[in-house]
Length: 424
Image (cartoon, rainbow, N blue to C red; front, top):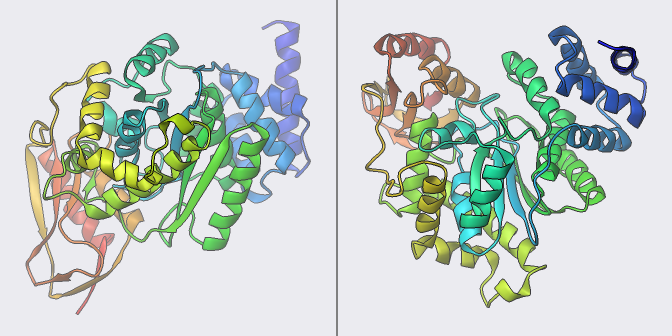
């Protein structure tokens, strides 16, 4: 390490010390931290101290801007012409895979949507984990550009793209704790969007007792911060703040969530309608935003009506298959071609009653015990949801795993960490 690198590292360490003491940081200090993390020259302990520094006090608007800008500038960037759309969900609720429905709808509508997704942090599957169950997700910037220029969209992982590399290092530090600070979420999301060339964005901000954001007031505050930060980078943004008490879909885990997506794209009789409704709402909001800057693609329909037309006409399914094929998957993929785990076990209701509560934390834990997301075929399929009536010994969910011993372990875990609260 030369003197310049020594100086940069020392500056980063001093900046972390200052932030731990509640001091405001300059852009020079922020850049030093991001540069050291992106080059992996800070130890995990120092990176952890930096992550911890944001939990209590958070960041000022200027610090949010500085951290986002520095995270972008220490990585690679993609570039596309015209309207570049994107969608992001703060998430925390498993089994709500709207992205893989929205991307083909937006691409079929004629807009570019290079979706760079993350792997799981707090849930049993991130969008990249789900897409990886059916296609490749790890590409170079040149390959992503080629895919998007050819088919209009992609669902890829940041792996070799090098967009905001410091964020991926930070995520590895956060993963064992299974949570992020709100300000860190904002920085992470916006840096990835800027790096991907996004200029039109819809944000899904769910809140609920077992979501990442628990209270409406917090969700509203996070939405304001997102919009203010996005405007400083010239990104047009709409935000949907919504209460979520349960997964919108039924599948929990990569291949089961991919099946939910295909159920909807194929308009299968077993499709989860709540997931379809949520995806159409977000796709509609994004289309309306894109139409503001591209009148040629706007007709009499509202964004949501156009999204529904694209879905019901089969255009979204056709586009999804094009994207999957462009990413090395089966060009004829369908819900029928997906292979589920060999081992499965139906879980029965202990007594009759009504489902009054779903604990999403416990749902995540049990799905991880089954092997998700590393085991792409592992997970849970919810046969019942909130407010459903159940009879004693009626199946309420199905466990899947490639390892039969994990199913036994999950059964024990479920007794200690119940997913459903059933009232007699």
